[in-house]
Image (cartoon, rainbow, N blue to C red; front, side, top):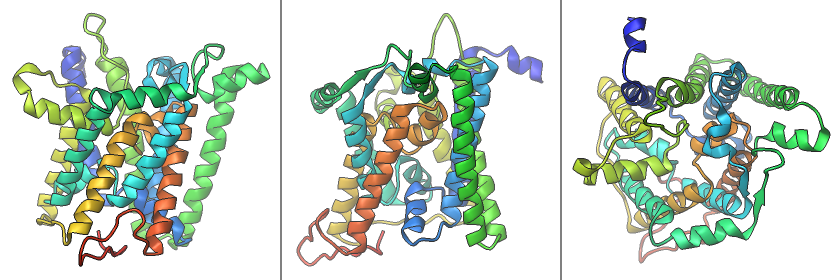
Length: 378
């Protein structure tokens, strides 16, 4: 069986691997409610709970797995978008901050809404469509000139280091070997995330549910290096080169929407198949658990909040070169300085939005007529 798998065409392995990765993400994401926004809500309440445990486990396994893979020499992570030698600092900071605000307004990122949409959540379908439109408008449409202007405001060229991997940047300043610095950076991240995991598990009193979230988060994190293997090794073809990439959802949701509209003149790629796999996996679990139901908007104010959140995520996700999964897991797994900045900006934007929301403010979304925005409603 293994021999027959190896003999398959690289494109078959690429698309088949993408579909399987998306399927697993959909199953694990729906089973655990994996969501960075929910994890930040737990921190706001000063009690890291199951969502925080899952996210820490995912980040830990994503970083460790990707760095072991890179250290083996089988996949060169320097070829990924996240390690480009140009750091667009302003656009990454602004994009991440806006994405974080949008994530709170829309009650979840693109990956989370793909999982929710599979269960009949009509709000999530609207969020995904709006996110896709704004992502494409920012990449290639009417918002592209604004994106290019923002990217040029403060662009740092890092040719001396070769790329924007944190160990390479530190090596230019210290003269130490990047290999040893990579080990040190990974060790610090592992220790910090492991401490967070232990704190969260202790707060959860070692409940079985907490261990379930731990395993689900670790499983999602392992999908990141698996995606690097699929695009960088199994699906690599010197005659039809494909970009080295891992899981992300902002641009791929836009690509998937375009693919649906122009199927006869379009070609499926890794990102599109991951999106399809997430929907399929989450649908399967929703059917098995019989928790599918139609959910819509309660008020016009709620509709406006979700629209604004989706637009901010589509625009901000492109500027930041990724969403919570793209920059937060895939990008950080490469030890990219830009991705670390993007994740920090996403967290900062989300915390500001959560603080405003907790105070019942209508600064972000004004009331419409008799509609009232309640922070408890989603």
